[in-house]
Structure formats: C-alpha cells, structure tokens
Image (cartoon, rainbow, N blue to C red; front, side, top):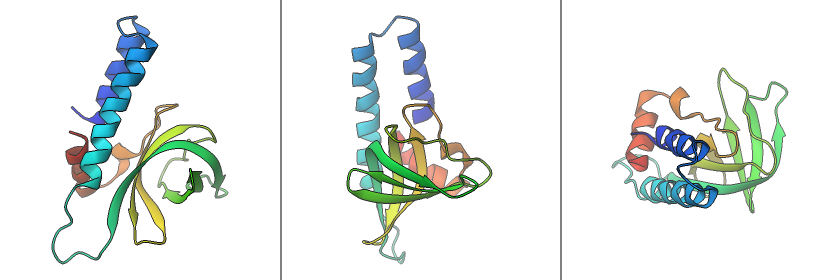
Length: 140
C-alpha cells in the first residue's frame, strides 16, 4: 500500500474514533520516518551524476509563489527548497507540515515530490512512472 493510502486510512480510523489523536500522530510519524529513511538510503545507479536525494520533513516557515502558483520557494528550518508543479497550483501555506523528497547538488535543493501533512495535498501521483517507483520503494 502506498504512503498516501496509509495516511488516508489512519485519518479515517481517527475520524471514526478508533484511534486517539495521539495514536494517530504517533502512527503517522512512524510511517513518515520509515519513508524518510528509505528514500535517503536508496542507492544511486552507477554512472548517474552526483545528486543526492533527501527527504525533508517539517513545518514551513515561509513560502513565496510564482504568479500562477506553480512554482514556490519555501523554507523548512534553515533549508531553502524550490518546488515546481505542472498542471495544478501548489497548495502549501506557512506553518503547514510537509514531507518533501528533493534532489540536491550540494547548493540547491529542488523538490521532486511533496506531501502536505496538514491539508492532504500531494504531488506523488502526478510524477512520471520512474519517479513514482523510487518514492514508492522508499515508502514501502
């Protein structure tokens, strides 16, 4: 089962009263921590440029959008992250809790995928199949 489905199932259990808010948060954090660990430890293929994948999770301190809201620069802690989204506006606000899977060359951090834990918006399903395989393998 994919992470987004697991998170939706947890929210349903919480909403039905089968999980307390504390149990929901603990289980959600467990799922996301496992996902972060798997993503960051996913091996690069030989011959690929030296680009590191990172999973960054935290609250958005600030965010600036392009005019069409399809590109955003956000700050999580002291990390500046750029997100681009094709076809839909980015639905992230300051103080939202997000998980971002990003590539970095050491200077710039470019988000590949994001999940907004606060409002449920995500870009996982929108990316091309090879990228989905990487995130899916990391989130299993």
